[in-house]
Length: 62
Image (cartoon, rainbow, N blue to C red; front, side, top):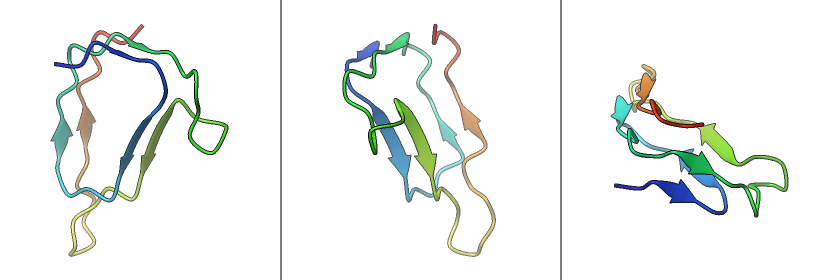
């Protein structure tokens, strides 16, 4: 269970519906994806073209 990230989170090119990150509390962003983003979510869909990722379980993110 991930609670803290010092850099960035990149969620890309996946085929799942839900990403359970309920314990994640902080994304510090000391380094950024493309020098801009602490959280980047890109191209997460199923091969048949239906969007796959529908829920991020970020219930404790502050």
